[in-house]
Length: 294
Image 1 (cartoon, rainbow, N blue to C red):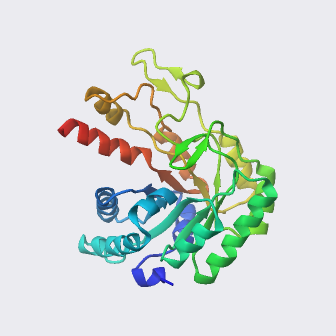
Image 2: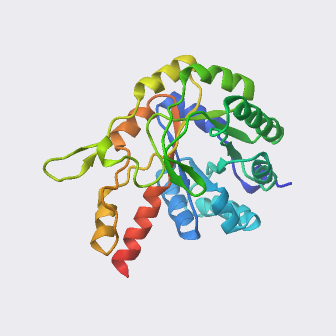
């Protein structure tokens, strides 16, 4: 059993409270290699910001659970070397799909886990999430649950269609499971193709797609029922067009790739949305730089 506190990590409880009170959100960056981790920690140290390092089940299998633990510990020490005296770094499992993977992550030093039972019938989602919470809370590890389904592809997480979170379910879900935060679906989606062209309009001058707005009415209804409760947005990469253009310029093919406009993310972060997940943007930046140089 590895205690995350001995690695210098923290859980999400206090940072989420401060984020909600302060009207901002914590970035949660997926990473798959050392170079991504270096960039995340450098940015966090430079801005003196808390940060969530998150890995999917596939990324954890790729990295090896033991190596990942020491990478997280090294990230804390690296942040200190960069001048951050008391770094606030979370190591989080993204889209855990079983009790076993969540338990393994807790045992190996993760300070936060997500159990994603959103594809299950409601009662099964509740039962699975509650089981994970009961185990994780013994070790002061925070747990994120999910209601609603995001479209798109992220590692093993695949969904053709999105289904908005039902506000009428959230009180019952949070009460029965004891989760510390709740991932919801209000129109974001995984991957660099967050919207189909027919869902968007086109800028007549640039020809670029303009995505539809997020369902802030659903978010408002959830916050009305769960005032001050930590809300999470998955699939929230903005897909910067400068990276898309660079990739296309140097041989890539990403026609009509479009993300969530940053102004919508800023609007969401002024509410109870205190964690915003970012994966595609990091991959796009990495890919654009490699293609341009090579």
